[in-house]
Length: 370
Image 1 (tube, rainbow, N blue to C red):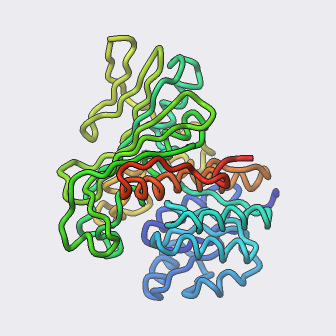
Image 2 (image 1 turned 30 degrees about the horizontal axis):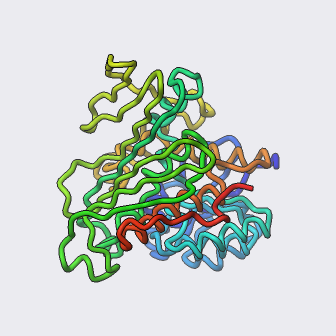
C-alpha cells in the first residue's frame, strides 16, 4: 500500500490528541472525524480543518474512502465498534482495552483472520520513552539474561465518567500488563491474582467488585520468566504511577517512585540514577515534535488522561507511526490482534481469579500467536 492512508478518528476527547499527528505523518491523511455531539464535532473539525464529519458511526463506516479507523471512545464501546469496522472492511486502531470480555476478544481475533484486515491495540506504555529505553538496553545485551518483570498502574479515578465507578482494577490493566509481555515479546500462559482491601460500598454495586487493589502473577509462555502486576483505581492513597521494572543478570531498571524524579539502573549493587532520553529520532521528522508536546494550546485544554499520564511518555506519535507503517508495509503491527487479546485477557481473567481466591486460570489458545 503506497498511497496515503485515509484515517477516521472516532471519539474526539482523548482522540483529538492524534489528529495533527496523522495530519503531519507523511503516509497518512485525516479524512474524517466522528463524534455524537455535533457542537463538539464542529469545534474540532473547524480547529483542524477537517471537512468530513460524522455524528453517526454506522454512516461513517459506509464511506468507501476510509481505509482505517482509530477508535477513542469509552471502553464499553471498543469491541462493538472494532467489530463493526472490520466487517465494513476497515483496518482498526483502538485505544485500550481491546474489549471487556474474553468472548469479545475472541470475536475480534477471528474477524481479523477472516477478513485479513489489521487490528492494533494502541497501548501507550509500550511506546513510551521509558519503555523504549529499557527495550534498547535489553536488546543491546546490556541487561544480560532477563530474570523478572514487574509493573504497576495506580490511579485515583474519582471524578471520571460514571462508567469507571467501581470498575474492577484488572479490567483496565493493559498499561501494566503490556510492558511485561512486550519486552521479552512473550505471551501470558496463565495467571493467578489476589484482591486486597475494599472500596466504598456505593462503588461496589455496579460491577460487584470489592477490591481496592488487585495483584497478579503471570507465567510467560515458553519461557522461564514470570511477572507481577498491580492495579488500583479507588480508595488507595498513591500519586498517579504507571511503572515498569525489569531485572536482568547484568543490569536492572527500576521506575522512579515519585513522578518527575529519575529512574534507577542497577549494575550489581551499584545504583545509578538515569535521565531517560527522548526517542523522537525513531520517527519521521514531521511528527517527531509530538513526543514532547500535546496538541492543545495550554494546560487548561489538555485531556485528563494526558495530564495524569505525564503525556503518556511521548508514545502517541510512535503508536501512529507503528500503525501506519504496518499498513503501508503489509506487516503485523505490535501488538497485533492476538497479542492485544493476550494482554487484555490477562486483566479480565486476573479479576476472575481474584474473585475466586487466586485460582490459576489459563489464557485461551486464540490469544497465542500461531
